[in-house]
Image: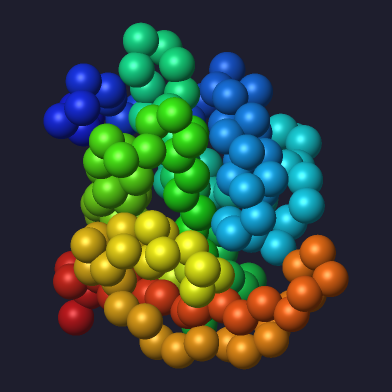
Length: 168
């Protein structure tokens, strides 16, 4: 477990964190600028989709303040080292460095596992997430314009990626 500099610690995500993880996810969904999803999945669906070795939570006194996880972008062998990530922080815990600590720990985990690209799509209106990703070493690779409808409105998605410095 790793200290975040906020008194909280980062730990592997476990099934006992499921309720809080999914609640934080739903809160992000409800805010309208985190994802195209309309509801958080069941724990079973979440657990099946996310790579088990790259799931983290930030805990403060046993309370989950945020989480990060990755999914493979493809089952094709050429993309074995490419994942898409998510990072969510409870609204009450934002502005404390938890997102950056989670993302930094996640990148250390993926680097150690030989994953060479971590990517994500972010709504351009989610300026806090874009700033977080820039601080964590991600770069903008482009914008997919009007890529999907969200609550009846066409939305753009800014594509960000971070290449592992461990992979040459």
